[in-house]
Image 1: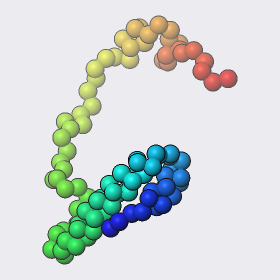
Image 2 (image 1 turned 180 degrees about the vertical axis):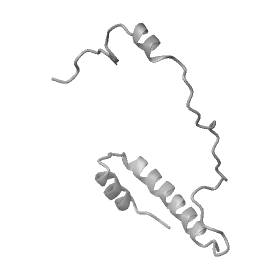
Image 3 (image 1 turned 30 degrees about the vertical axis):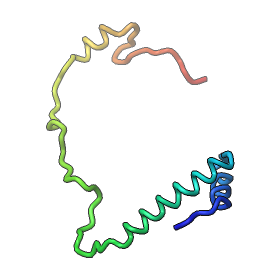
Length: 95
C-alpha cells in the first residue's frame, strides 16, 4: 500500500515532527512497506487459532508468597536516624 509524501507530512504535522524532503520520501517508502506487511498478515487464515493474550505460555515465576519476619519492629526503629514511638520521623515534604 503506497503512502504519499503528503500523507507523511500530514502525519508528521499531527505528531509535531519536521522532516526534510528526503526523509519524507524515505518515510513514505518505509511506511508503505509496513502497511504492505500488515496487509499480508490480514490475509492469514486464523479461524483455527485460539485467541490468546500472549504468544508464550505464561506461568508464575515468583516464589510462593510467605510472610516471614525479617527484622523486628524495634530493630527497624532502633536503626532509624529519627523515630517517634512506633513511627519513623521524616522531614516535612508538603507545605
